[in-house]
Length: 288
Length: 288
Figure 1 (cartoon, rainbow over the protein chains, first blue to last red):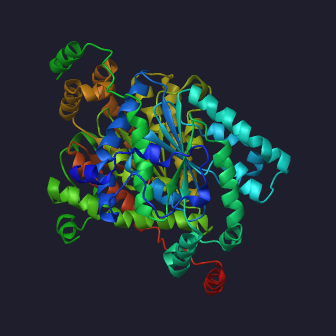
Figure 2 (figure 1 turned 45 degrees about the vertical axis):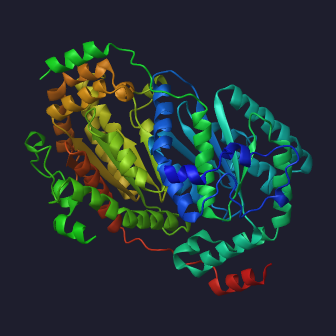
Figure 3 (figure 1 turned 90 degrees about the vertical axis):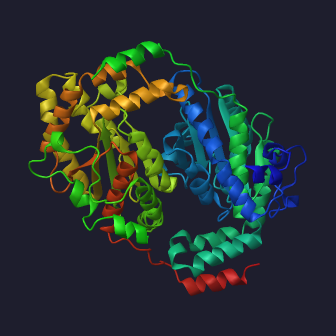
């Protein structure tokens, strides 16, 4: 914990990574480590050091929902290019939380059934219950990213979606959902290395698809689509956070700390018993 | 690993814990540690030591399902009296697996909607997809346990359910579901201590409910209901495993090892690439 204090700067990750007015994605350094001054070893230590606090806050959130003390829940949205490390976030950050308090949904290419409905239909179905940390591996933003890059629907249709998304997220926030939107930001060079590793290792072949290289050729169009989404869908109540992700250890620490800082702000506590503790203790003692 | 070899006996946990002909629940020692000769420290070490293998097998199962090489999935059913440690299994055993490959469903008192349907309706809806380890925190067995103890439906109705369950599980097994049913077996003395701890600790009060003490008074009836379920629903293709659970460290190790032994039996491997690796590597290299 002492080590963490010397390496985590005074700036919260929330402030260092929040997308504000005039943010330019192309200018963000994918190898930088905002709000953290330590190296990889210290970063990994800081990740482990924060586990207990994250555990406690998550359990308090869960407990307060069970006793009816809160309807609050979190929605962590993870977006990023192929190989940006979304899976690693699921495994190493989300995976460190009690699985009973977490709900992960991975949004793939919409099914035939899903395509019959408005694009938010499958999203709404996957929203977390009170007390739960919901995690979206990809999300409704795909409907203004891949859909825009490939014109999967007419432009006038995807163009309307930015304001639809803003209205939707405003409703969520008003309904006690803490929305945390994270873009895992890698460089094309880093992606090339990661794809090369998937091709070099037989135990990683299943993660590779020749289509990944086709998509890579649209890199610039994707970055542009991300820039527009960041510009148009980052209101103060549900801002984007852009996490430099060329260094996996940093990206994991950053997402963990974003979760933690949002949880801390909720003033969580252990619920007070709604029964007479002394009475129940006496009753239990009398039992065989 | 060396330590593990010296403390895990030659008997697989599957054989040591499987419910066979003539099994008597009342005779099972809730503090014993079948198939393991080590102490608590060694047990905790063995749990950690097996993490990597569990990780790899789970990822292979997941990978093979993604490439269409298998439809296999696991269903781990966890039953037990209040405080028997079901939550600890979710947190410490299931929680050590990549959350993207796991799906936990906790079955509470049926909702009004659920009560309108046959008792297996909500169970079927929660079955794992191919490649996934599904985990049930309580299950369809509640419908012959709490329902039987309190006669929540007429006896002739719950009496029919044993064969309905057997048919259902047979269909699952025929459909490439590996069914692993675990009863966490504690003594009433151990439950008393664990309830007392919940009452003594303000951070545990939310887990306590005065109704837990009412339920405790039906201990004998529950044990009888479990005995009948074990007698009637333990065919060779989907047997019960009774895990002595007074020692939390042992119960966690046992459930992990049961999972592991079942996964090992599936002959999992990394899927072979369905694309030309050299060709794709050359293509990637030519990209900027």
